[in-house]
Length: 262
Image (cartoon, rainbow, N blue to C red; front, side, top):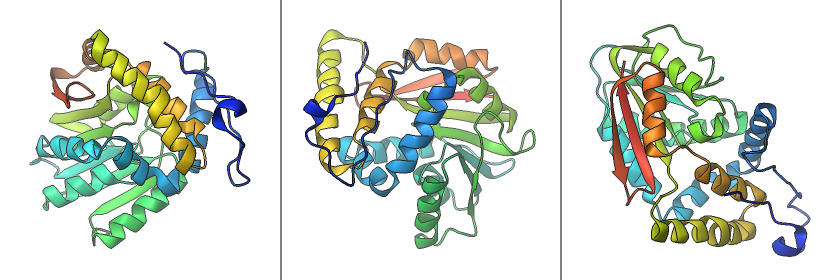
């Protein structure tokens, strides 16, 4: 199923502070286009990113991250890596829940990292949480440097998911955890109908009113519906060399936490 970016008749008259943007459907975009789209999207939604995430998920994203943080286990390196950290919500949550660890966060969007650093400073965590710009497919860390590497709502934006998982596994110590928290497009017909209506009608309508780049939320819906099924993604984790792969169904399958061991 493909989501089409609306034309100006659907979106209403453009505001002066709202540049018109169009993104190709995920299935039709090349790898280069996907990367450029993601950079553009996340550099333009930074100001309202946290508010929109909480509002549009009915704050369930907060509970999903907390669940992931509770599943983390430390003891070897006492270090956590948050890949595609965005504004650092998962990094902050891990640091608060596990006071004995240090945290590194990596993202390739500088605007998001700046917002994350401000949040970290407000929480008094600047001495324990460090953010840096980097590529999820070439993490700037040595092998086995972390007990846990995790990614929350970021892997759907990476075309080569298995390669990203392998890179996360590389930087985790033997016995360590690789975790992925990601939204899923539910498969039963009733949930599918409701979810499709929300993603394609309600969410973009709200985003059009409060975001300077409402087309970003059509991309969001498209990327969720294009994401592999839970069975397929679990197999991708195994393809990346992870063992004892588990998955946890959250909020009736709207989101899954995937957990594998190195």
